[in-house]
Length: 316
Image (cartoon, rainbow, N blue to C red; front, side, top):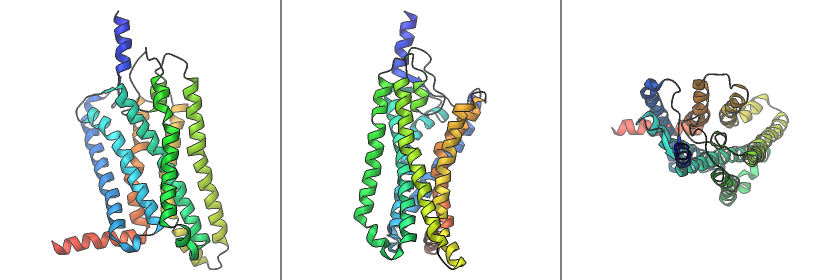
């Protein structure tokens, strides 16, 4: 009877993990996370406000940047409830339905961000390959359609995930490895075959993140080919400089993703603390650093932010 009760309880909730073996360190982690979430909101909010206010920034490149900022904020907000419950309120239990809902949004916004990075690579290719027709090719209507396609793709590929998890019986431990819900993390707790889940997850990763990485790489091969055809060295460097922010954003997204994947695959002997830190870096670092990178590397954004804060200082 006791086993049946435990099995039933595991169907109703999962237990999220804070800092393994160091619950006394949770308050310090809470402070750090609060700081990171604040930076995420301030940084991406500033980017959105600047693009909206400055008419000169109403260009395709900055529209895509705004979409990236919105996605970063949404991805951060997807992890916020469980992070707050663990590190601020010491509540580690999450309802089963809440867990798979969070899972849907985390994976969904991850696929959206990958799609936006591809769109931004295409934007840079068009701007460099055909600058005279840049605005006529990437019209407001085209940008809106690209955004709809990116969102629709993410919804379609992630939509089956909650149902694939919900069909599984959970009769073993209900303790997850992270402080938020992921498909691969919940899947390993099932006491039935997870072959369908594993196969579907692999197909989704290959057809979304994998294909997107190939498309971004191909775009930069074409960009580099175009740039090498420019006679002036100074012009070549100036043209490549317009891609630096996007290249940094791509590395900020894919390097932590590859790191987490490698640790899950080959780092099972590592401390659980390392797994926890890498998992949090994977989801929290890009939303924090992307607006900083674009503010530092994009002259128009940087100039407008300086003007905005300088104006407020003068008014004060």
